[in-house]
Amino acid sequence: MLTMIVRRLLLAIPTIIAITALLFFSVTTILGSPAGMMLGQDASTDAIAALNARYGFDRPAIMQYGAWIAGAIQGDFGRSFTTQQSVARAIADCIPVTLEMTLWSILLATTAAVILNTIPVARRALAGATTAVNLIGITVPNFMLGISLIFLFSVWLGWLPSTGWAPWSDGVAEHLKRIIMPVLTLSAYYFGVFSIVYRAEYRDVAQRMFIQVARAKGLSEWMVAFKHALPNAILPVITFVGITIGQLTGGAVVTETVFSMPGTGRLFVSAIAGHDFPVMLAIGMLIVTGVILMNLLADIAYTIVNPQIRFD
Amino acid sequence: MRRLRPVIGLLLIAAFVAMALLASVIAPYDPFKSSVEVIDPPSARHLLGTDELGRDILSRVIYGARTSLIIGLGAAICAMGIGVPVGLVAGYFGGRVDMLVVPLIDLFIALPGLVLALIITVMVGPNLLNLVLVLGFVMWPSVARLVRGQTLALRETLYIEAARAVGGGSAWIIRRHVWPNIMRVVAAQFAVSVSFAIFTSASLSFLGLGIPPPTPDWGGLVRAGFDFLSLNPLMSLAPGATVTATVMGFYLTGSSVR
Image (cartoon, rainbow over all chains, first blue to last red; front, side, top):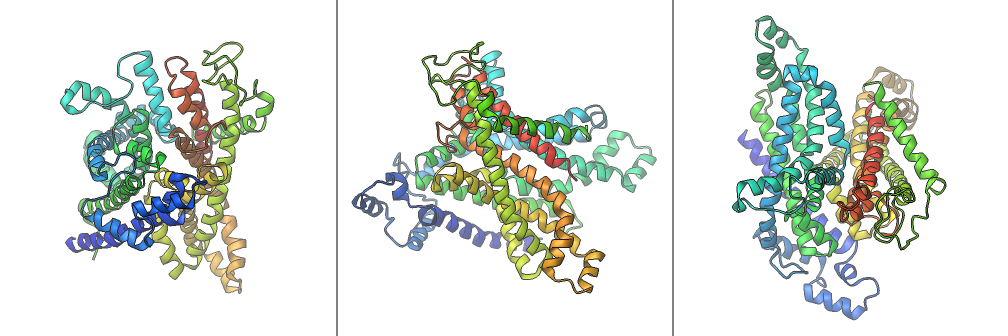
């Protein structure tokens, strides 16, 4: 078990280095050059040379990457081209917002999906409704969902503030008012995906022998559902969550933009729009690292909850 | 409901394709022509109102179908063009090719498609052709994974073994025995890819990093209308609804094939 974790962790390091290198070279040489992007196509050669010299883009690409990754490991991602502020600092300010929204969304999506597809009564009475919500979650784009919620709850009913952010220090009520719509928006897609996979697994499990035995013993439907079917149906879903969790970052980018939240996603969009390379690269690396670690975490969780699996 | 799914899906697709092809006939105004009637609320003359340059929103929404159709079909064709051959080769021959392809596919699938598309699009420059290529590039791994899995399963069947026993070459077996058997699944994946491409390109445009104005594009229209949500909610909800309906149509059609 421990060997597996250590081996996977060691394997993750070269993967992260390879992908960030690819990302770095794509942005600096393969797909275009920072100078070309920032100055436009009509820039004079002198201007391009001056900009390259100023930011060190005239050095060989491999050396640029070496310097960048060496800094990145120490938590130094350079300074933003547009604001001249420390990139690490700017991102550190944004992470709590994104992390909180994402965690609430995963929690809400998974709990709701499991409950709706496990409770015997809900499985029968709400099956059609759950199917419809699954479909809505998967196909309605985040921006459409977010804007619809704003229209309904802010413009029409006037219950919630439309956009913006309030930290916990502004009071719990104020904070929750600002975060509820983003969380609903972001969790919808994940709810749909999770619900479909879990429902299919549950149907499979429900037909197995041990479920019939549990029923024959005289256990209530609730006991059968939660103690016997749920733990077995949820196993494959864990792996699935690990693989798809990266997709949440795309949703977070859109959701933060809709609700003007000071999170990493919106910072990423403005960095891309403003061709702010250090910020773009740093957040790109953060996403890649996060995705790889999440996959690893899901694998580990899978081994822990399923004693049948052994990696040696 | 099971049986209704593909019917609803195909109806939505038909409506979308008709809107795109007949845009010049059904649109009441020129989608690019501005007027002095700026941000007019919905009226008999302008059913969805006008935008900040006085352009008819309904006409822009109708023409937006064309942009989405080109991107959706184009990107899905690109994804198939790379994904199907890669999946067939990796699945049928296995071995070293497979060992090289599978980690690559896994890696790509783990990375968020929207973020990947964002980075590449801004580097190569956002225009229609580039968006088609970028989205195709982002989507091919899921196609390849599906085709590989299907091919892998088929390879072990008796009739393929028989075909090999009578001396059939690999290319012939793939063409005559493998391909016809996976065509249905590939067609379904094609529909799902179209829905993903339209979904993602609309999201890119909404972020202001997709098709540049003045080309009518649903994501861009939603973004433009967002600022006027309290004045004329339809300005952003109408194009939002058309994207949703189109994505739903392709998704329903694709996901009903099993």
